[in-house]
Length: 317
Length: 244
Image (cartoon, rainbow over the protein chains, first blue to last red):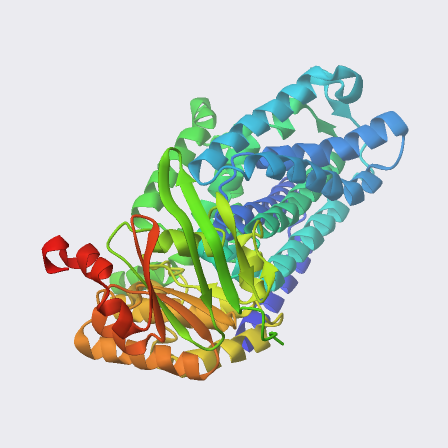
């Protein structure tokens, strides 16, 4: 308990100091994206890893949050930061609608329904042009020119999400989430209102994902439906972040976010310009290979299987 | 308090139809507070169906169920648990990847709200059920006797007034069987009313105050263990007509 707190504090200090040491805008940008994915991966993990409701639709919440901030600023002229405060709540509303419909299904059927829901949301954003500008997207003017403020907002968001997930998982709610994952029928007979707690888990998950989406709008200053409602680049990426890092662990998705953003960028930039250009097209392939590797050798992710990794390293020495 | 005229638990002509199949028809019985009430019958007679109706695993087709004088018809499974009716499953349903302690804590949260209180209640219940030595083990590592015991411990941690035990003795060896009987009697002495489904005559005949026997979804006998054991219809259902 104490040791964990010390480690958390050290990590926090390192991340607070990091952008002061790393002054390159490019690396700061990567750090901001990684922190954003810490939030999204952790959110997915709460719903899927802990509560057992596998979602292929987290882009719904990300996109809803992003468009909340974007539309408020674009149509009503309010600050996009107001949108960031509200993005989480609109995502929760979207989540409750999705939950109302999809939670009637269990297991793989729920997962399939979330894919459909995600694609429906993307198509709505594409076609409801009067509200979303359709494929033209929403363009804002960034509040800050420096990356530094964005970095600290992202860091605060990531820290808040980790803190909340940690507190939730140590409480009654956490026990109930895991019980539902393990056996929903047994959970019900032990007095657990499965419908209520699945929706609570979904609401928390959607809140942080939506806030991350609204932050993305603020930071990138441009969104379109194919970016923020993307099945591969948001929904699937959220799953990969959690799986690579370690499903149903607090720190897993955080570690997974750093790894995934690092790998994605390494390949997207064709190993920082050193490799031929076709390598930049191959990051999806590398993701695929990584998932296969993790499933075969580290089924619990990097954090979940950390003792195993440590043993291997010690033995090979 | 339960009034003299009001039964503690009452099933009134309960029936269940699955499609065209009548699984249960017009079964009625009352259970008094503090007794162990046995429910017997050949395989497929509808015993587990009765439990599934009581805790609303699925809805009643006909009839009504009263707990402490109030109808629980239409209440949700989790609400029935909060009301004070716990149950165990014949096919045990441990929360596999959680430890034994965490399993019991999850159910203790039915009555308390903080981590600390849930832990205390869970530890007390584990102590009561003699499962303390296993508390840090993952539930999936327990052998069948341990899993059955965990099933009871977990149900008990929801602090039920009425406990439904579904074949908790099945699959146990003689030594484990004696321990199971001891635990059931200990729970009764603590004030928990018990309805038990059991195939093992050694168990059901020794611990039950009264027994209700059903066959093909209908009541065929009810009475003390001795009365039921000597009832020709019961003997016929169990051993065939030539023995009756």
